[in-house]
Every structure is written in structure tokens, then in C-alpha cells.
Length: 239
Image 1 (cartoon, rainbow, N blue to C red):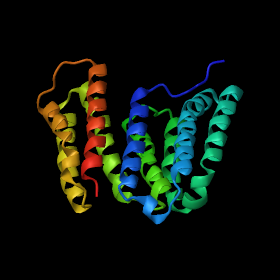
Image 2: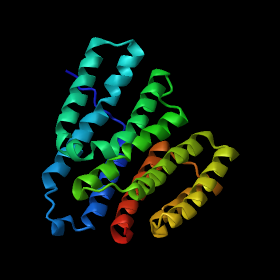
Image 3: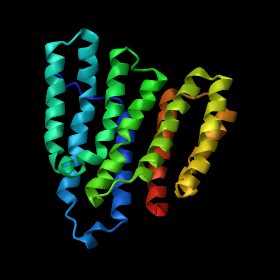
Image 4: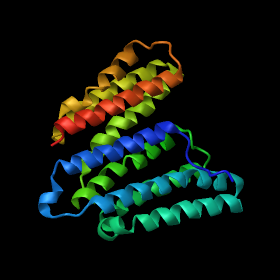
């Protein structure tokens, strides 16, 4: 029996990095001094999110095939088990995070429209993956951090434009990449987020000016390395 799990390792890298960013930022608040028991809730929350992410493939297959029974059953399996594991988190955080249902609905609409690989769908998907950062942060601290969500989403969404630039190699995407990175600076400054966290964006700007010939897999490894650097910088400079 073939289990329809998500095999895009880039998505898992973004999800894992977002979870780590949420965990690190949450632990920096030292929740144990407030007597908060967060270990079990955090672990169950992360596992539950893994199940929900894996519901994407059977959902997309069900929409493409007009609702095949096998795909629907796998979709329900991942969603129901994921939600069951998320019950401790949802008991406390459902009101705070219900706004993200808009992202879920818009992504489903894009899948239904056959636009899974369009720019809007990819950005929407990344915005959903990075919700894991404030979710894990909430599981640890009991508080929502829009600042953390903004930082993680802005950082990892740049990867979408980086891949587009690598594939299209047009002046438009070069300018978009440069504008995106430059715009992130005042945005981070306004939100009181350390600008040092944006240091990996220097590679994006260099790439926009000097587009090297490299395999797409190489670009993926570079983005992975930048994600690791982002986590390290978050651990050192998040406040």
C-alpha cells in the first residue's frame, strides 16, 4: 500500500525550519518560570501538523480525479488524525488561529482551479507552512506572535521568487528579487526584528545581479543552508 505523503523536501525544510524558529523563540521567553507545561502539547502539535501537511497530496489527487474514493479516504485519515493530535493546542488557540482558515480555503480553491504550481499557489502554500512557527510558539508560550509569523514568512517566501528567477532568468524577476529583499529591511525594522536575521538575503541580491549557471538541486541546497543560517540567527538575535 502506497502512502501518499508529501515528497517535496523543500516543503519539509520550510516546515521544519518554521517549527524550530517557533520553538527557539518560544524557549527564549523561558516559559518554565511561568509554570507552563508545554512539552507534551508542543510535541503533539508538531506531529499533528505533519499529518495535516500530508493531507495535501490526496486532496489534490481527489480534486483532479473528481473525488476518487481512495484519495478521499487518505485525505480524511490525515486530517482527522492531525486534528485529533492538535486538540490540546486547539483547546487554547483555536480562536486566535481561526483567521488562517482563509489561507486554507484560498489554497484549496487554487488547487481546484488547477493552479497548484502557479506563483500565487506557491506563495499561499509557503504562508501556510510558516504558520507552524507561531503555532509552535503558541504551544510553548500560550501567546500569539505575529512578529514571528511575519519574519518567517517573509524570509522563506523569498525562496519562491529565487526559484522563479532561476527558471525564468528574466529582468522582471531579477528586479522583483531585489525589490523584495530591499523592502524586507524597513519592514523588519518597523516590526522591531533584528536586521541581522536578513543577512542570508545578500545571496539573493547577488544572484539577481549575477545569475550563475547551476542545477536547480544546487539552488535547493543553497536555500537549505540559508534556512539553517536563519534558524541560527533567530536563536542568537530574536527578542
